[in-house]
Length: 312
Length: 182
Image (cartoon, rainbow over all chains, first blue to last red; front, side):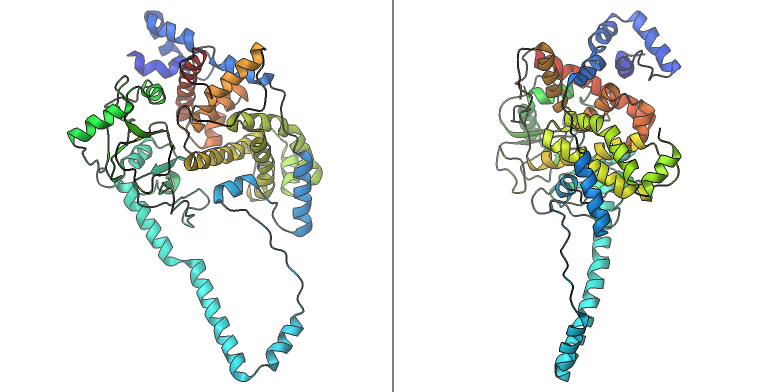
């Protein structure tokens, strides 16, 4: 068995996490491979290093604030207010409106005092408002459009395909092809949440919501020109962050590698052979791991796309 | 694992039961979240939100639940959500500024080392940072993490393995001065 095939086992060697078969495979390989023994020695102290964080003294006492929030929610009959997470996720502050008591009788009296045509107008307006609100709540067009959009993307996007192939659900997929932005979550599969439509143009689709989709046609991989490839290779050279990820098997030809290279027109996405030690400074930005380790996006010289969110 | 009676009390919104749960888990949860987000205020908010979200959602659960795993699942998802959103709106290149830890650096080796460890963790993708902290810091097993993050046992093992390799590389480079410290 090749070293790269058992490399992941070395990291878990003697951790109790390997199955007996895996442990045996690792042991047999180690017995005959000096290089892997060195690698094991190098990596074996990682758990200990992480455990040393227990030396920290800081921790947050939230008992009072949680108690207050829960008591307030019981008192007011509303769900507890979740601040940071909701606000960050939705991009808005969640608040509970203050209601003041209104005497219903006074509204009825005022209404009945009005002329017939005014009362009719109010009734017709109210009916129209109810119809419009119902339509907005159901929003049939959004259901159809977003579902269709998600379906198209899932069937035609190489990155989604590769993640679907791994069957690793709960994974967000970011498609940055400048089309738009939709986010699906486990709880909100079809009740879509539009996120960052105007600014980021990043589409995040919850894979779990899409696993029912049948495999589509082969992913589109528009070819870059030779000149574009040369430029893109030059971009990545000597970037330490890229190198770290590339050094973990994310090299040309690996099925898991998806080094997206976006040309200046932003619609051009292609696989690119990236290797260590092939980079220069001539680049605008390198985004590694926007949502997944294998996702490396590079934009090179020339005009940045108008939607590009990462300015330096 | 909590007794079924405890879970039932929590589902009924029993104040005492919730107080006990908060007292038991707030310290490890907030430390975990601090190491995830490296920001004390944010970690505090996320800790509070974890309990409030659990309070809100526990009545929707049925049967036995592993409360500890469930709390960490909520905490992890929320932390990753926040980190991703922050990353999307403010891209951090390799040498970019990141929040300065409030713990002051001094000459004591262990504090300095912990900062280096956090520095290295901070450079890893969230999902690798989370699994390293859940497994090597909080002591969860891979099968528990798999259930928690809704991934297979095999995927959890490989993610942990890869996370350790990445951490080792980044940490070595930081210690060797190969990368700018942030």
